[in-house]
Length: 163
Picture 1 (cartoon, helix red, strand yellow):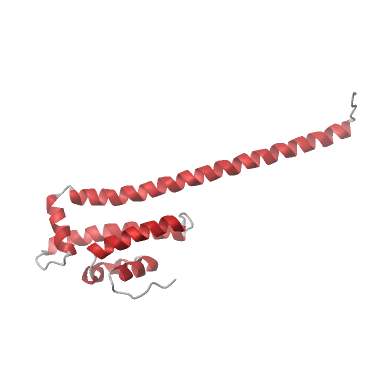
Picture 2 (cartoon, rainbow, N blue to C red):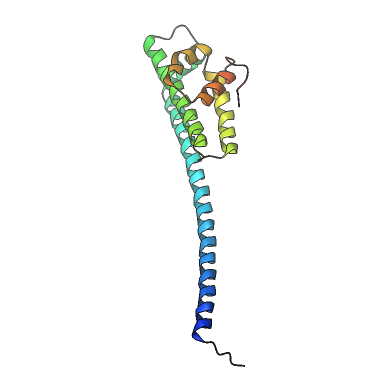
C-alpha cells in the first residue's frame, strides 16, 4: 500500500519529527547538566578536603609549628606572642575553611548532607583546638553567623544553635 502525502501533510509530519528531536535533545541536556553538577560537587568537596589537609600537613611537617599547636590547644601560658600569633593563624585558617563551606551551602552550591558531614568534622576539630579564649581572640574577623554559632556550641560557649 502506497501512501501519498501532499505538501501540507509532509510539513505536519516534519513538524512532529522536529518536535521529537527537540524533546530528545532536552532530555540529553538535562542528563548532561545533572552529570556536570554531580562532578562539580565532587570537585568542590575534594577541594575542601585538600584545603583542610594542606593546613594539617603544613602543621604536621613542621616540628616547631606542631609543638605550638599542641601547646596552643591546651591554652598553655608559655606561648610567646609570636607563637600565639602562629597558633591563632592555624585556627583562623581552619575556621576560614568552615566558613567557606557554609557560604557555599548558603549560595545553594552544596547539599545539606555534605555540609552536615563537614560540620561534624569541624565541630570535633573545634572541641579539640579552640578554647573560649582562642575564640575571643579571633572572632572579630566576621565569620558567617551560622559558623560562629556552631563553633561556639562546639566549644561550650553556647547552649544551642538557632535554626
